[in-house]
Length: 326
Image (cartoon, rainbow, N blue to C red; front, side, top):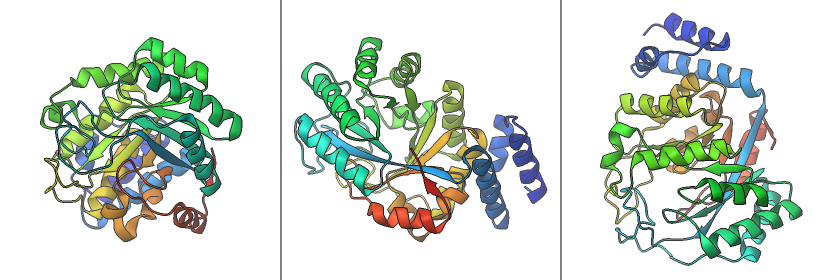
């Protein structure tokens, strides 16, 4: 693909049009010097939508392990022997303490995450009370990632002050049965739709490096576009010993940047957040995520793995002339 063709697609998007699936598939074949042109064009699209503004997310693993689902990448699945720490739902005070600490470190959004197919009963009550406490004590946008969602649950969370709901599709529908067999892809799509109906700002994306093809990455990006999600989190597989994915190779840094750019070309007006696995995958290329089209990152630790110091991320953002906003 010649540079002029990439520029034509970028100008099409900058003129508020959408690219087709065929055009997106052509972008997956970009390589060599043209890849850097594609990355630069994605950065230009990001700049049109968000200027110099980026945001920073942080999460807490509020309930760890013993999950009933068999997701092949996940350290928290009860099907895998990964040796992680498992514990029941944390209390409101512990969740609040983490939120306050992460805000001081520079986070603008904070998500409470629980393992399992769906939260309910006492766990849901704790999440709601924690959300109310966080809203009173901080300026953070309060997010939740609790598995599958019903409309009644969604209304309860909204009433407690949760403004964002996160639920990943993880991969393309055509690849999902290679990743999870204990629930259907349609369950995840339904949860994303319910979250939107309930008035949440919806965050849904996936993990790259699960053995999917480039065509399946395009498939996922177009599914997210059709669902009209507000934020697309992109994770990169960090293989966990004890899972079926433990021997999978990492996504290369340039393929990671190409993927970010591809998702920006397909979802030009949405937030794109770079999350788990970025440290191992991108290595010294982490500052390139914004040039490649991202406008947010997840800072601090992840669910069961360590992340990068948020101070280092904020210094990187400042050095790039960008501003952290909520």
